[in-house]
Image 1 (cartoon, rainbow, N blue to C red):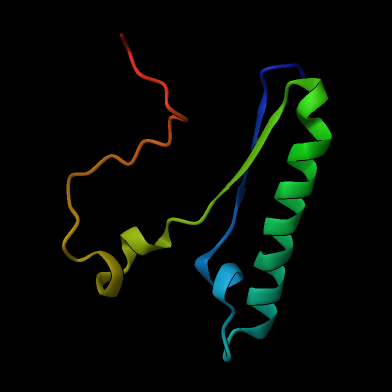
Image 2 (image 1 turned 90 degrees about the vertical axis):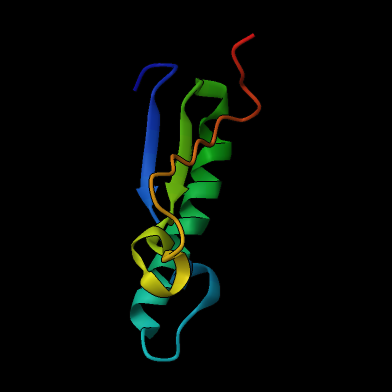
Length: 81
């Protein structure tokens, strides 16, 4: 990959919090989160960014029934100015 490239992994809130009924899924997603963090530090010198997204809450009526029409930018402080 070239400098400036990005890797985006798919994580899950279950990987952060665990789940009694989804043991295998929780373990796998937790591993993806750890892999993402480790790979990100490994690829910093190469100029490659590594992140994971875990935004299932937007699809869950329990978590986000009051959210609609929103764009959630993760922009690291960037602003046009």
